[in-house]
Image (cartoon, rainbow, N blue to C red; front, side):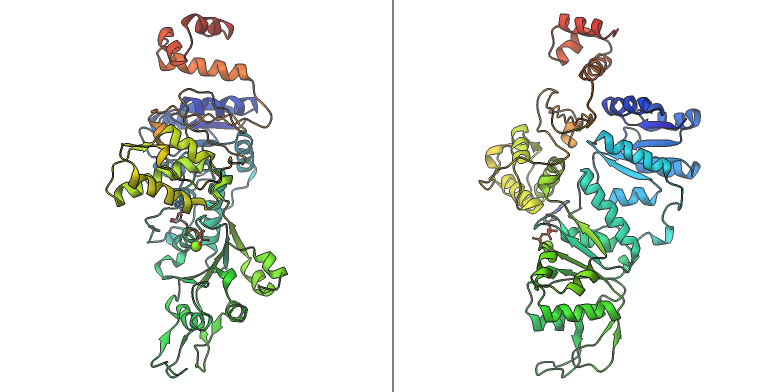
Length: 485
Ligand SMILES: Nc1ncnc2c1ncn2[C@@H]1O[C@H](COP(=O)(O)OP(=O)(O)OP(=O)(O)O)[C@@H](O)[C@H]1O
Ligand SMILES: [Mg+2]
């Protein structure tokens, strides 16, 4: 029988995992702290650990490292409400098998567990020599804890590891293509070498060629001296061709040649120069359609479309909104010397109800404006000026706005969870419940919540009843019904 240890400080998470997994036939134990986890690994000897990345007494990444060192065979899957590309990549490097973002969908968790058990161990953690020296990507970290973004982080990691393969990044405007391009570079072995970026839409064609390939002295009238192009300057590193969909057709042909031959010539030059750069390209345009319309070379498209990272629009991953919004509150507090503590529940609700046609960039701008306008400590919805368009977020995952009591039920799966850091301190009692496709027993859920409320108040029924907004009699009645003591 397969044994799984669940390590998470949130009782509701432990319950919502242990319960269904036991039913699935696994032998399950739980731990709430790092110390407890350590003891249980000794005593229970699990085959797999689901490990929260933030624990009250320890860092999940540290534990991961220790557990893997002492027990290389142990399968460890990280769980987190605070995913960013850095910790995801770090976790994989330390030997994590997979990564689950909170709130999660139970069916996909089951899938991940099954896969992890069936996978033959092929390789251990990435070689130490591959650890890039330059870990810091940018002040603007790439964050997101929706399963869709975690998927993106995983693909970034895979792309980074290939080192030479061309990477194509697709996504609507404002989804973070630039940050993703930087991440691919900085998590690759090329990170010690330069990252050069050129916006193909912003530069006239003749200059673009000059910028990329450089020229020899006297190559044209103004060419006073030799000029190194980006391909040369970036030697050993990466070249990011942003807005490649806007690159003029003749230039497309030249880039294709560089990719195919791995060499090129400076303008006016008479010898080939070998290229050692990885090309990363991005566009918000529909390249396939452009190919059909004859506006983009099909051969270049196929060359670029080797490893593709598709960034989903923000409206398809609303669970990222609270996390991103708070991240930007922090960023702009510093930048504008403000001291806004959080968003009001109504403000969060407004952000969640909006469709974000301009994606993360629009969210960032909205928060910045609001921070400047706000004169209380809490961001109010009045200062969030959203374009008139509204729409409700669609997607498999849902984040609910802060509500004063548990109960907002949206989407699928059974993981009541807090979408962001403010909830971690329990201030707003945020709750997200996602329902499993297979359905769930409301009674069981109710029973568990009552049990938790009682535990939380050390069995004090009056306080537990008040906590649940029930009368004491009602609570007693339900305890009896569920056989709770
Ligand atoms: N996941 C994320 N985490 C943090 N910041 C993000 C994220 N995604 C985007 N941003 C921020 O949103 C803004 C827009 O991102 P970026 O410039 O990378 O978008 P883009 O996809 O290149 O858009 P465009 O197609 O318009 O060029 C930037 O300020 C970036 O830092
Ligand atoms: Mg861009």
